[in-house]
Image (cartoon, rainbow, N blue to C red):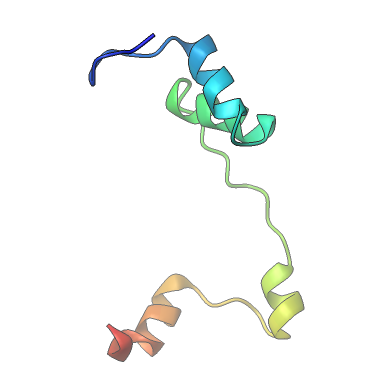
Length: 70
């Protein structure tokens, strides 16, 4: 069914469409955020220090060091 630009898509149709191009856990997270207002960024990994051999920088630190590139 073709919908107008501002016509909402039913959740079940949106889940099916999104699920065809991304993993189910991403679709669930999308709905928890956009429909339920939930935001959970609590998963912390050690990937940066593992790869770089040093602690990760804060975005502010990174942007100050790289300001000349912009």
